[in-house]
Image (cartoon, rainbow, N blue to C red; front, top):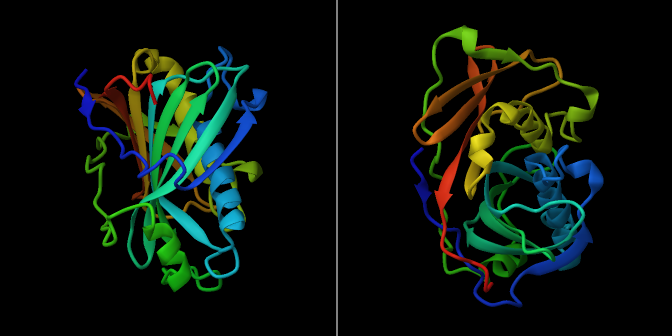
Amino acid sequence: MTSTIGTLPDPPSQDAGYTNHWPVRAGDVDRHGRLRLDGIARYLQDIAWEDLNTSGFVTSDPTWIVRRTVIDVIRPIEWPDRVTLHRWCSGVSTRWANMRVRITSAAGGLVETEAFWINVDEKSGTTARISDAGFTHLAATTAEHRLRWSRMIGDTPPTDPAYDLPYPLREVDIDLFQHMNNAAYWQAVEQLLPGHTELLTEPYRAVIEYNSPITADRDLRIRSDIDPAGLLLWFLTGESISAAVRIGPIDHPDTSTR
């Protein structure tokens, strides 16, 4: 398979951003002990909420939604282990921000992530301007202060519905916004990974882009395809592509000294 080339940006300094630690949870690993992608997604949600509370912007900028998550698994994290999560802003505009989280483990695991977060008005659910203090706080760790949205997944799904896998939504998949939770999408991805274990033997990148919310009353189908760059998945509700996923190998420099 063709490898994706590119690395996610480093923090401006080791003390920039917010850091916390916790043990790998047994409920977040697969039958072989590998930290699953949905487990990583939950860690990203947890560290984001902790960061928001610690920084003091939980009142002025309380509500954010994720438009995209990039997960680079460089060295897999396995149970039992203990992880350190380091979170900082790698790009910001007046209404959204790229938030980097580097996950390292005591046993040498390394996962690099970056998520595109959009600030929204809690009542209307529409895009909202980040507070002046919040913008200043985020901008302190990046020189990119005019961040723009650009798709990473532009592929179109096959037209043959024979590729579809019906995926029933569960009550536990729905979050406070009455939408399918970010981590639940990755659970669906994990359901299909056992048929593509070759993707997990070397460093790989997993990207998800959310196009529109999936609510509990929708019939969800997952369409898949394989190309030279890896596995492609589309979350379909009716004729709409609610989310798209790409997973494939990544070329990454040695990061053992970080």
